[in-house]
Every structure is written in C-alpha cells, then in structure tokens.
Image 1 (tube, rainbow, N blue to C red):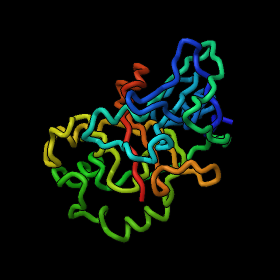
Image 2 (image 1 turned 90 degrees about the vertical axis):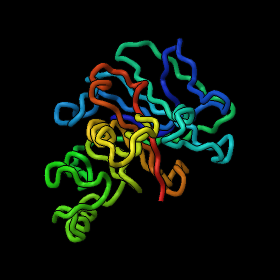
Image 3 (image 1 turned 120 degrees about the vertical axis):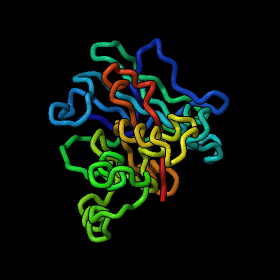
Image 4 (image 1 turned 180 degrees about the vertical axis):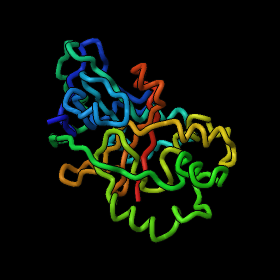
Length: 245
C-alpha cells in the first residue's frame, strides 16, 4: 500500500490541524507514502521517503458556499499539502468535531503513461510556436481524430502523482498559471505561457463515489508545483485548482 484516501493523518505533535481562517478546519483527503512510490521511474523529483498529506475544505461546513477561484488569492487556503519527513515522530490527530471523517480507501501505485494536451505550451511550441495559448491551432496534432484517440487512451481522471494532469475542463496548468500571475497576464501574454509550461502536476485526486468523496459534480482536485519548489521541498508553494463536469 502506498497511501490511502480518508482516515486519520499522522501529524507531528507540533502541527496544528490545517484550517482556512474565517471558514473552519480542512478535511483530510489523502496520505501518500513516498517510499512506496516508483520515484526512480517517475517524472517529478519527489522525496525518496516521508509522507505527503493533502487537505481540502470540502464544503461540509458551508454547503459549498465558499469556492476556490484562481483570481482570488484568499481562497487558495482552502487546500493544503503538508510533508512529514521520514523518522519524524507523529501522532494520530482526531478529526475536528466540525468535519466528518472520510472512510479509508487503500491506495497502491502503478506506473502508467499519460498524454499531454496538444495545447500544453511545450507541445504547442514543438509544432506551432506562437499559436494562441489554450486553443486548437492549425496542425494535425489538434485534429479531432487524434483527440478522440487520446481520449480513448486516457479517458478517466484517476488518483495520480506526477505525469500529465487529466483536465475535466480547461487545462489546469493554465488555470494555476493565471493564479500565480494574480490575473495580470492575458492569454496572449508570454509570461502566462511560460508559467503554464513550467509547472508540473504534483497530485490529482478524483471523486470517490464509494465513500462519498465528491468534489463538486464528480470533479477532481489538482495540485501543481514549480520544479524548483519541488526540488527544495517547498510544498507549501504547491498551487491548487479543482474542476468538475
């Protein structure tokens, strides 16, 4: 087992349970045991050991009234990633009384191929440099036939660490790039293209019907991070967005 959805997290005793100021405690989503991941064959620089913990304000306390928007920096606190180093003494924190505990779903890891969207900045630049960000451009890589084949190859969101994000709506890399630039760059701004091309998928968690872990209308949670922040283990700088159908 490489981790689990739900259950209770093991947090160092000095850690407080994560919360969104003015709204309440976050719900615990998942834990990932880095030692159980095939990091040598992966595409991102994850720690070889230690535990990653994901938290999210899932709407239990306000019936989903407060949402995350890329342009609203205060809403970014709705999601949090914590890293607990290997060997660090932890205690099992009880879930705050305000939020219900999700049942445990064990997770195992396997390597799988994923496909980047043709409008990812790096793919776009390889075929038609300068094409408009986030839109189809005049190249067969954007043909309906190829897109349909890619969809058959990678047709579900799934729980995922690394690789390419499976966006439910707009490309998640562009969404977090807009957030990083605080809405200052238009889609024609090269800074937005550069930011979207640099960030990598850190973690993606799908809805899980079996335990009523539902993100909007069968949506998904996404954390992306810049490679330099990942290399320095600055997980607090992971950028978040979510999408639903």
